[in-house]
View (cartoon, rainbow, N blue to C red):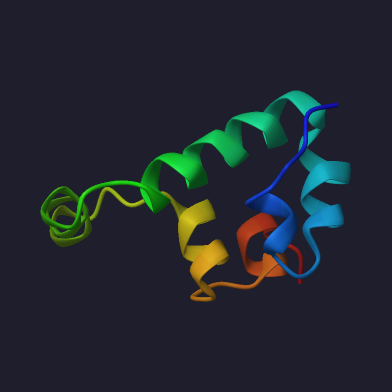
Length: 72
């Protein structure tokens, strides 16, 4: 398994790995890395249009892992 540098910074990321699987979590890690290194103007444009993925919102602390996975 590749290192999940960004995803492992999320508290409770083990639940995401367990529910989503290894391949999906690697994709989510790439998605977080992409948005983390996006230039400011492009990020603001994506944010204002509402195209920021939910996993990045979890990474930023806007959602909990349970909310992301739909666990009550």
